[in-house]
Image 1 (tube, rainbow, N blue to C red):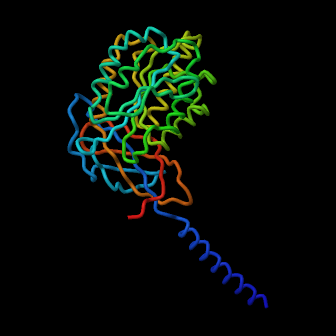
Image 2: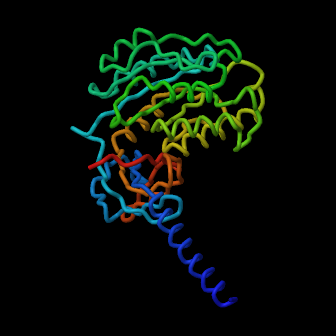
Image 3: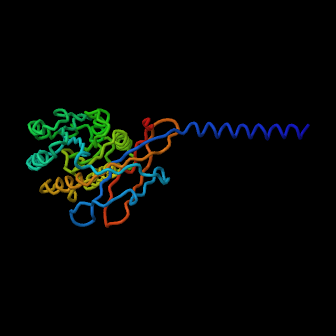
Amino acid sequence: MVKVRLTMMVAAAILLGGSLASWSEAANTPGQGEAIVTVIPKKGHERVTDITLQDLQLKINGKETKVASWVPMRGANDDMEMVLLIDTSARNSLGQQLNDIEHFIKSVPANAKFALGYMDNGQAMLTGPLSTDHTLALNKLHLPGGLPGSSGGPYFALSDLAHRWPSNDPRARRIVVMITDGVDIYNPRFDPEDPYIQAAIQDSIRARLVVYSIYWHDMGRFDNTQYFQDSGQSLLAELTQATGGDSFWMGTGEPVSFQPFFEDLSWRLENQYRLNFYSELKEKPEIRTMNVKVGGAAIKVYAPQQVFVTPALAQ
């Protein structure tokens, strides 16, 4: 009798194991993801043009993953959408930079869609729609209010923009440029796990935003100490690196001109690629870690540290 029971238990275990394996396999569904990757030389401003799929190494959640496509964002593939967000709490001395901001807007490629916005009370208040008519934004460019705390925090505004991105184009590369001091007025100390910046990062990843920042002091007491200035810059660096962008500043003081920053940014935008890959999903879309390496030339790679994987579209 004991042998019979043992045999039945083993058989049941085998059947259960087989069922669980089948269920696990069935639960995995094809997923897809994409990222905008910037590749520039370590020295000089020449364009890197000889990168192939064989030069790429991609890991998703630490696992080797095959790159499905690698397309330069130039010519017919140049489908950029850009929003420039200005912190309404910025000091009125920002007026010294309005000419540089105007020059940058005029330099945005004619076929790129552009919109200007202001961080106001935790929202991204756009002055108009995304449009290839860049004069719409130029006509709305003005000094911020300069009132302490009026922006409601840069990370709330970025999350708001991510949730309400003014376009439904699934293929456009979405660029955000933030002019702010980066201080979280609700949690002004430097905290890498700050819930507001973590929410902004995740919202940006889901919305496929590549975020850049230019540091400028805000009004109010939080910009009066080295500690809070360092905190704001560190949070901005955490945000931009997570999304594949970068942060621009000149120490903790006011830069004499934004022009060098805008020139560097424009050069980076001309050297971006869309990377596509496939990766299995368990149940629903999720954010995963990503690591991209490009072999060969002496280059710098700026890629999102995280990526949003969704169910693959039927072929």
